[in-house]
Length: 585
Image 1 (cartoon, helix red, strand yellow):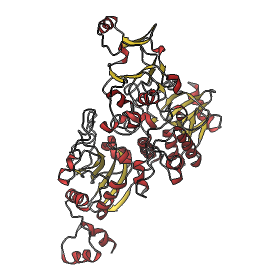
Image 2 (image 1 turned 120 degrees about the horizontal axis):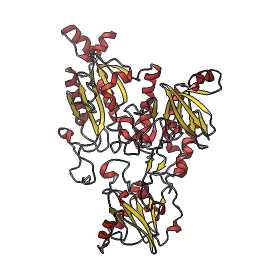
Image 3 (image 1 turned 90 degrees about the vertical axis):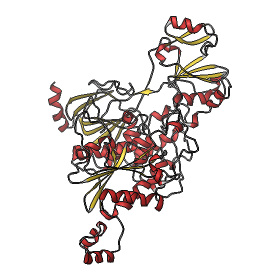
Image 4 (image 1 turned 60 degrees about the vertical axis):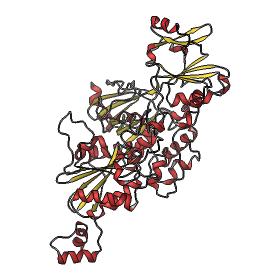
């Protein structure tokens, strides 16, 4: 216990390194939060165990092609709009640091991302210490952590931000699993698979990436998984199977030997080696005998090689304090403010924050968690530095144009649909605009932002898909898949703006009150648009204007200054959109 009392003095004497913020890992999540810590002049350090940032991409994906979209041209010069279609860039202040400057390919090689992230870190002068592996994190008391590296050096931190991603390949407890080859270790040399029969355990993107790389050389590739194949264009979840990796679907459906099987929990099976090869069979011997009686059992033939492609998990081994396997045994358990539920004071950035929106949005991917990192920075700024959430204040006459502009440009609420929202606080003559607020914290808005909400109404603006327009059984290409008329806006299927109005901002009334958004006083859907441009006057703007006027019980017509003066001289009351002019006159 003596160290608890000695460390503060060692910090003062510079014997022990001491920082306000310690970031573990210089991957995209750690580098992104590092950008904001650097920009705001925070006392921070980033520890990276490799000799460069983004070391995950040195090895993965194994076949070296990223599946994140690098759309360099959109027909627009609007930088914020273009980020809606840029899935690789980190957020910054300089156009030179956009990923499109590092690769022209729609699906770039992984090596280009290594070049990008290291150039980004150097350009913004991030405080990264390379070749330092944090082996142990101990919480001594609130706002006090001790970090120990591979050389037994100690660092004292008030706040720890973990950006280590999902680094541990999942290896299930299956008899004979040692007979398999892991995705992390497989050969990427094509001829090694020439004339082989291969079984792949798993049917995620790493499994399909592997199958696509080898299926033109094998006798056949079989893939086994827990459930029906989920394709990203069916589910609208970017973590599901992407078209760039699904060529093998053709050779299965067109009966050219490759195939897919659903066999439930992989831990119900075992792998055995016989004279003629490897077999996957039921772990229950009696069940195996029964299955063996069926001559058309798909698994009756041997395999030359079985490959594990079962995903990755968060590494909890560096925490002295208890930290469980978390959500689905894969992600750490965190609160909506990105803080560990088990060790307060430890925050998570990057792909490991995906427990908050797993299979719902893009928080597990760069184009999503770059915005989560920005939101976390704002949360930390208020919680530990007394800096309120950034906002813009306007006269009420600007409510319509400001809202239309954000609907048509905002990248954060577009990429993190259903998870990040814009919040508008309104009084009678003015409003305040807050960007990219975590929707799961909406009931704690005042506490998180430091913003008073008394005597104000609230509009929450987000983007959403149609409630039933996703899933493996959904026909997403049916002819009536899109709503085209404003009167059917609530039936829109594709991503479209949704506004929730509350006369009184929602608050959490009890611990059990966990619904994301309560039933609003008014709800409005803006009809989907083929070009995702919601600026057409009759179809979009006028309907939005009517909704906002109904919320305010006031007209939002734009008047000339002379009209406002005439109203003031001839009427008992004037339109609210004239208040700003009359106040300044």
